[in-house]
Length: 256
View 1 (cartoon, rainbow, N blue to C red):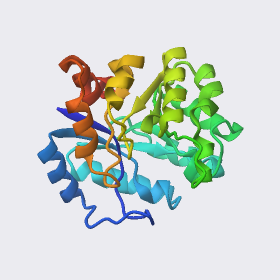
View 2 (view 1 turned 90 degrees about the horizontal axis):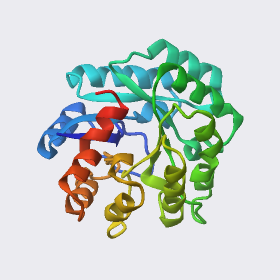
View 3 (view 1 turned 90 degrees about the vertical axis):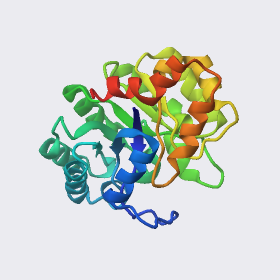
């Protein structure tokens, strides 16, 4: 079995083309790739800020998939009060298993005080947080808002909250900074989602932090899950390490 810890339903990404993002299409895709369960961040809530509509779409996906599509609760630091109200209203352990942050998309630096509410919520509900992390970029300046070291104060303060660094920091500098955090703090994990295709990346990450701190994520439908699956399956690491990354770690983090 495989658990995809980082997946997006919905159409509302201006820089990506989708030919079909229906639940039926993705369930067929999951079946072909032996993905038993996925953790979804619906674009309606994340991109457009329509938090309630995003929650309703997540519930519909859960029901239509017979429980195979689970979801994140999106926290938008630009609207803290509303975000918390929506999270409290819709939080239900069977469907929503973690909190999602995206500093670059929301335009709020990862160390901003407004994120305190999200970390408090995660701690109170025993939920992990998954956040976009990336390397500062000259062609995409907003990525500096998600630079891994910016999360450190919250990581240290909320030691019971597991942080999954989406994209493992993105590019080599961010990856090295994420590794540094994971070596320092036991509550830091990373996922494989996105266009992070460095040769021998999985071998490198396992060697640096161990396979029990890495989870498979595809970033589908934005990316093709077969790319990230191929990196893990082709890595020169023991089968037990691949099992950790493909499902065991996610089962533990999301209480599957």
